[in-house]
Amino acid sequence: MLHVIEHTLIDTLKLLPFLFLTYLAMEYLEHKAAARTQEMVGKAGRLGPVIGGILGILPQCGFAAGASGLYAGRVISLGTLLSIYLSTSDEMLPILISEQAPAGEILKLLAIKAIIGVMAGLLVDLLWGWREGRAGQKKEPCQKIPLVKPAQPSWHQEQAHIHSLCEKEHCGCEKGIFRSALSHTVQIGIFILLVTFALNLMLHALGEDALGNLILNKPVLGPVLAGLVGMIPNCAGSVVITQLYLRGAMGMGAAMAGLLTGTGVGLLVLFKADHDRKDVLKVLGLLYSIGVLAGIVLK
Image (cartoon, rainbow, N blue to C red; front, side):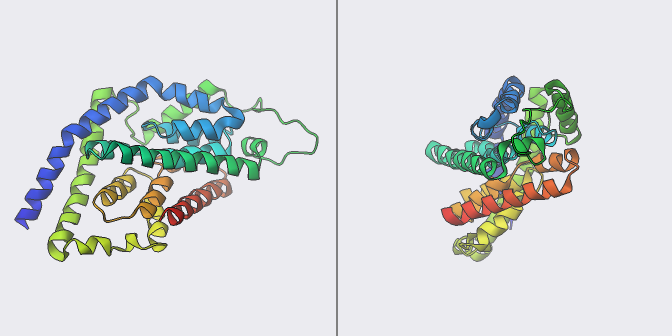
């Protein structure tokens, strides 16, 4: 047991400097680009799923939360929201970088998420109707529905509302870059420590073969369960899934199912901002179904 604890502490402490530097760079990027990227998505129109799916892979804490607020105000379409949810990496990217995963592997995971996000978003808007998705109502024949209703909140009002929600969820938006990066490092470091300890304990007690026999490695059941883990509305889901994937305890299919359904606090903000519970359940159902289906196909 002492050997397991020592090995776990050493492994985690080695990661912390890389994790902090990664979060520091990402916080700088987010502070510089967050408002601009959200405005691009808000004004993208029919290309929303394409723009959202591509920008979603950028490491931004509040992007999924911002998209939730924009969708609740019917500023963006359902397909655009789903493309952002599916492509956003939450804590996956910083953990991959701090673990010094191969660049090819990182790019492959990001590309898969972006492609699935864009394709799913475009398909959803095609099936549901882009205008109907924005306006939240059925389109009358031969009636031109405006891009944004006059009664809808302005972009700046929506931004203020999103920022308020973001602060309430303690995602670090209101802190300075250094403090926010340090806070992220401590929080995620604790999760990594716990996951690493559990895996090292399993390896010590049962051997390496036990990892391959985990239920999350099963062809269909793995993605079904991982998709549920990914939908936990905080960083824990993506941390656990990424760590399990890197250590061989979870296959590509299950890992992608969990990472595709993970939105950070995005779903939590959606529940608070969108008072149409049937609409929220529709988003949840589509997100989970797409994530699990993609995981099953990817194996």
